[in-house]
Image (cartoon, rainbow, N blue to C red; front, side, top):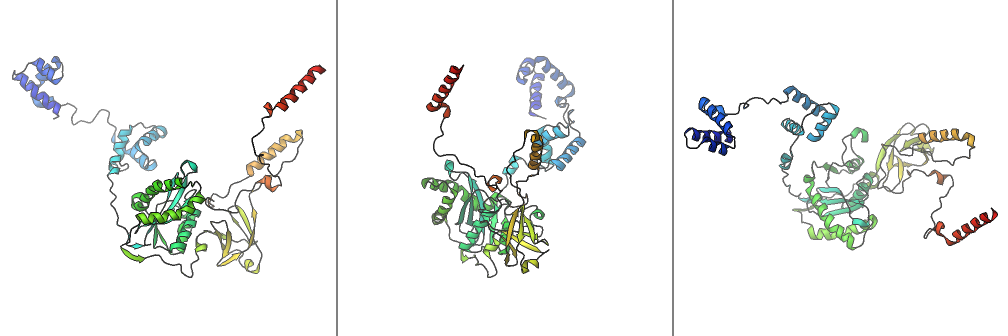
Length: 469
């Protein structure tokens, strides 16, 4: 029985024993006198058990049937497995015309192990992991997007390389965003300074790990960054949670405090100037916060004789050379010089090496093949002068040409963020046709409407018109 029912039994027992009156019992129970008299008659006729709620142990009249519940859970598993209860409620009503409250859905999804409550998520335990023993055994890398220049410059990313054993910053690079080319540049500089570590430890960013390997690399499933590390015999491990790579995450918090203030004091507001200062800041940071490793052995390895750092740190794609000694890459047609060596490669595969500094080489083994290019993107041509009667046909032709123009590169090609001086810029048709845009003259523009000389000439012209009339 509930506390309310036990209290009623106690009060009604006192009324039966004439220890209190019915009116006093009704006041104690918070009921009317007539309702108390009804409860008293029931108590005297059928005993204390008759005061229990009659619906106890029975299903609610508004209860949703089990088959409806199973059907809704099946829909959730099929279409909305990663949706929250509130969004699931909206989609069930919108797409399936099923109305269920969000709290009922929350209960069903929790019981079916589809949804984890916030309280349970907070109970997840991330136990600390000890540092590695040796310097260079595990290097954590991460990109931190932040307003590093505050209001003085744009928001950008800082690529951070930190050693797990010592907590020292091994390399810092500012970039517009986390992209493959900037990571290749930063990793190349790191390897030139320190050598090859045993492994890098990163998050599951698209630069490091892909879930659709067949679309990126049909043979290995590696990203371009992962392929570069594989060529240099360096492993990369992707953490499953931010807590797993807490060393670099906590370093990012410190950098977002200290480094921002140092950049402010020095008046640095550009990525180039910040990259020039990064080495000085890292040296001061390591002197303050660096730890000595438990094992003094340095696990960094030198590059082997057969390993080419410049050749590995680029984007590589395979292309089949046509019988005309041509290949297409990112909507640009590459035409190889018809040398004796190139003619023997017709119909065979070659490697297109796209470097972060904008260079592009077509390689067969260790041989670079000379080429010339023809851009497949059509440029804008200067319009012809047409008569008024031919205007409709000219507009139709222009609309057809605009519909056929594709001034975008291949969707499967690399994003050119972080790469400089490349040959894949979309050509400006007006420039290619010889037209040079005139820039605005320096200084303040003249307001001709309020120019006294212009006003005087206008008044003089109006006076002449009035005199002629």
